[in-house]
Length: 559
Ligand SMILES: [Zn+2]
Ligand SMILES: [Zn+2]
Image 1: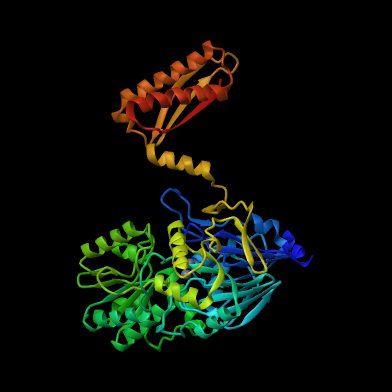
Image 2: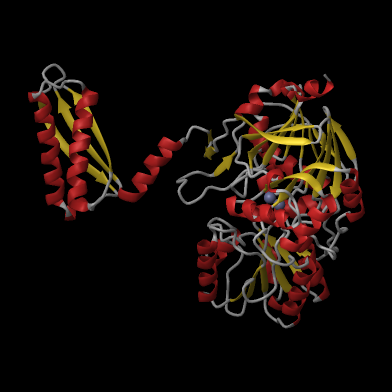
């Protein structure tokens, strides 16, 4: 009797990833038990090359909006965009308290202010446990490329779920403390039903080097440099920014900060005491020219080559306060996120052209990853020893690789789940299974102020327009008889240069005209059908002649 009760559908804890699987970005995991929902992280992802004009991509909030009265709270693992970036969009339609560490919440608060949204932000300290609905969430200190990162041990009616968050194992972090291994071992000893773990670097052998290596490399560069130094890095990597400032102080250099997000994060981190900057070290970027080159460091955004970033503008000689000159040493303390290689390479080329010496991670140890490599993953698996495992935070290949690492450690294949967003795990006492039901969660595109109004059809049009351009066929037609009164005229954009292709345009005009005349003879008077005829005839003709597929747009006017 008890067992069947236990197996009732309503009694299970459901785990639903709404983002973060088969992608690195827009992490969002839902935990649901009876009338309570806990959300873990709420991030965005950046568009890929096919998403023309899209600014950012956010998870589908449909399920959360439909279950709004169940939402008991959200816990954040750390302050990176792929974990907090979509929060303002969710809070526009639902209200729930948000829990996170100090720096994480400061970054969220800053974001919400920009969107004009108020929220209930509840700071937690690593080590603290908070009760959110039916879930008891223990936060545990971890190391990553942003300060104040935590992993989570969540006590649920079905057992303990352990979520690593984004992490690496740094035994010698630059600032702050290492991971709380003792606590992790205790959690593992008590028994963990299911683990969710970061798969980003699962393909990398060995260990991710310590952040301390970056510090050593930076010192070496500073020691041998008598010119101006510019360093681009992720603004959120507060520890690294601190290291750059410390190194500047050792070598008697002043520091100027450039780029909106860098200035933002430095101010936030300084205010809450996470960045310690001695008096008289910071100088305004607009006054940096008055400082001798050998006594100046500029910390800037743009390590990913983002076109509007401060570094990209400097490289293009389009920055108000900073002009790159011969002898400048520019350090890119980052590696390009996959997909950004080309833009980063462009910026590096421009900087070299202006006479700067550019140092990037291929030629010096000035960046380390924030994610665990194979041996670190093995250590976490061995400490936590979960019964079931769900690799997260990775593309499909990363998830697969992480799964096979778990198998080499002796985990049964059937206890490992490789899921896609919207699939559901059902957790019962000592047992986890994937259920048939799924939740619809297509990525939602944000373009300017529009959220979700650009769908796949619009994107397909944008792709076609970008590839072969547009042809517009304008004709005036007598609606009663279907007689062509004037036109058709052909207008094109991005297809061919009209003045040099008059023959082609004239031939296309003729095809459209024939097409309309044929419609009249056949008694086709419906404008939709007529447009289809024109479109199909023209498409076939143009393809045969040019092997191109422009978007064809017939516009009829009634006379
Ligand atoms: Zn992260
Ligand atoms: Zn992440």
